[in-house]
Length: 199
Image 1 (tube, rainbow, N blue to C red):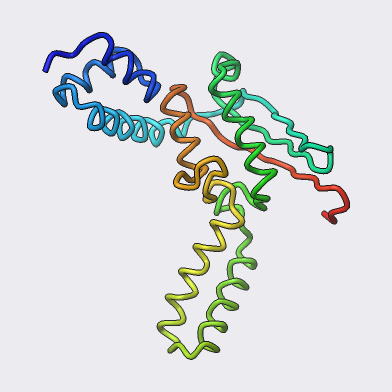
Image 2: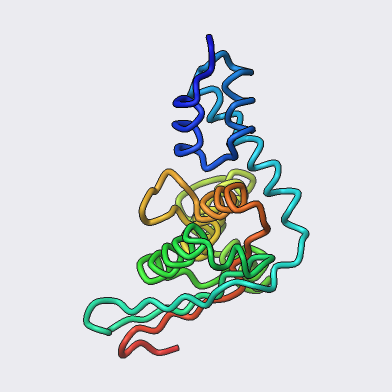
């Protein structure tokens, strides 16, 4: 099938990929939009993994104040250059992350930030609960591991399902932005204030 300029344009709008990459993907998959988009996404995720080691010291501090000013969020989102920091896609990502934090109330940015004593206490509790439910110790161990994954999904920003699309984790949203912007993007830190809430 001949690849038209309109097809390339449509794929670019759908994926955010460059013109040449979009054309190459469509040619490779004989104009099949779905396969081309999937290939571009896979390529973008591979690129994101490579870029993860690069220093990200530019970016924005996004501030979100919820209606009625009863809750506010500040989140620092970093990228590699001030050029990307000014891109509308990057600004939108920062805003979406602030909105997500306001709604989902994560405690940590990454799994690695969860203190070892918190992990140990949660694992022990989940294991005790499973044994109290009548499970054997080896089964209880596996159940505890599964429940710890659920703990990460509830308390760790990057592991949470994104509030605007729960089929997408926050880390996937960021990886998509890395693929689109072409730079490493890192959520450095955040703070969430709710009126009357103890810190």
